[in-house]
Length: 378
Image (cartoon, rainbow, N blue to C red; front, top):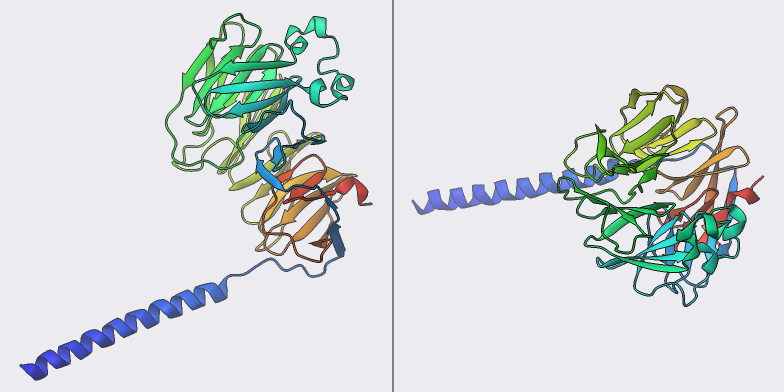
């Protein structure tokens, strides 16, 4: 009996050893087999040689805030001054205002010309008498949501909250009660690229956190249409939204749709990001593809960068730039013929950038406190 128990004990030890060995081999093989994008040739080295005095502390799709309180918008840097509220999240610039969320209690608006002397030059609020909202330098609207994104048109403020709630406020009204309020289904996790509401002529399009477009009339403040883009349980928020009165483009991480003259078209890929530019939609996918699509989402040009993890889209001088995060490469694709060049990147100290951009605007990539404006690259 003792010999039998000893044999069983030895067998158990052997099985345990074999299991551990198999698991270790699996892990080693798994790690060793992971592949990364390697270009055939790097055209040149691109140096992120411009920097701020303070690093980026927080960011979203429409802007970033430095640790010292300065702002980065899609048009550039806004140095910190006392008008920028402390301990507030910068949501972006819209309708002549810089928009901040002060915790989950209120939205704080600062007129652009207060922080940026060029605001009146872009005709956002060029005549104060014609836009009474722009005649007020600062406004605070009490809310019951933790706002994640916001847009303004005229005197209407549209918000999306972290609980998938949507609201419209009239910022000129004596009492700041919402003109419209709706709460969608609860969500557990979202992609960090969260689209902001889109104002059309008499509508506002809410990009929800559960993969829908809720279209609301700004005349009656009632829903007119509910469009389901995708129905994934996690990370299903609308990450991109662009449109005008004749067409709308919207994407979740799993699907891209376009609505043109009442017709709906779809593009089923794992979407990393998208950008509409000069009549075409440019799309990055999770498997390293860049696609150029027409308004019906028909592919015009595609380029696959095997094993690449692409992030960010900037366009300058008829060239699209995207960042390959594993190797620290910038890939430049000519929009005329879709030919491409690859640049190795580094900062002024020769260090490769980390595997993530903090923010990207029309022609600039930002990470930490460094940035590169592709208008310089000819």
